[in-house]
Amino acid sequence: MSSTPRKLFYLFPWGILILLLLLMTLGLVNLYSATSSVRGEWSELFRSQLLWNAIGLGVLGLMLTHHYRILNQVAVPFYLLTLVLLVLVIVIGKKSGGQQNWLSLGPITLQPSELAKVSLLLMLSRHFSKRSLEGNHRLTEILKPLGIILLPMSLILIEKDLGSALFFVLIGGTYLFVAGVKLRYFMIAFLLAVTLSGVGYRYFLGDYQRGRIQTFLNPESDPRGKGYHLLQSKVAVGSGKVFGKGFLQGDLNKFRFLPERHTDFVYPVLAEEWGFVGSAVVLLLFLSLLLVLLQSSAKLQDPFGGFLVLGGAALIFWQGAINLGGVLGLMPLAGVTLPFFSYGGSATIATMLAMGVACNAVMRRYMF
Image 1 (cartoon, rainbow, N blue to C red):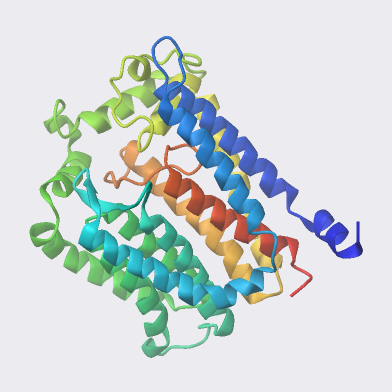
Image 2: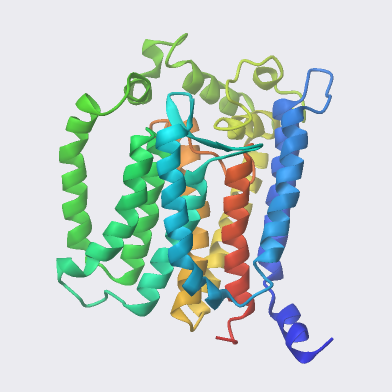
């Protein structure tokens, strides 16, 4: 083994990889329970997710083969490609659950908004690694990053995918905050968002989207209709108590009382079968992964690499926060999946792509 591969081997963030493998394994175990038959037989969804996880690990390994700084040149064309895919979704995309966010390319069906999340991380990392906003008070200095954020977000809003659009706001806000944008700009943006939310609710949201907000405010008003998902989710989480009912023993999961249990509502399956203790262990693993990523980001001397790792941490955090907030009744349901646990090929590939980029940057932290 030559000196460079040996050095990369020892500098590789093995802690991040171990945490990823643990979360992926627990996610597969939970998905098996959520999708298997009453007799415990494997489902096609579970087999498919096994394949997607294997492909995701392959993508992570592929991202380690070249120096991460090549992404500085790849960021713009990849960003433009995702914009083209988002436009194609609007024109010829498939509708599902009131949203038009799927694109069929021959035998492949993908969700371009997931790839757009990764392209956003690359573009914002590229921009802010060249120019910090700290100490700069001019509004014009944030127009370019705002354009980078708002362009794909607007296309996703046209697709009526509010959950993904919310993610773009949060991930963009994270970058702007870390880059040094003054708090008063965030306050102005918040007040503007509150002012415009009433107009958006009245004229731009679909009936099912308004229903999600109404359900969040008062799910008991329609327990057999719009409030059914959230109420069953809360029952499942609460029924797990301290230690849970046991693997494959969750009544709401086993008898199909819990809707969308393989995607949006995969966490209540975990809470019902493994209880507070099992749920806390999973959340602790997520927290450990985030802390390791943030610590690694802070230690990187190369700004571009540091922002890439920050983006990976932000992707995991905000997707997890939006999903858990929705299924626990802390915020309106947004249709955002839980990383490593929910079924989904596009989301798995996007997450592992971001994690591969982060691992690459940490591994080459002394080689920029």
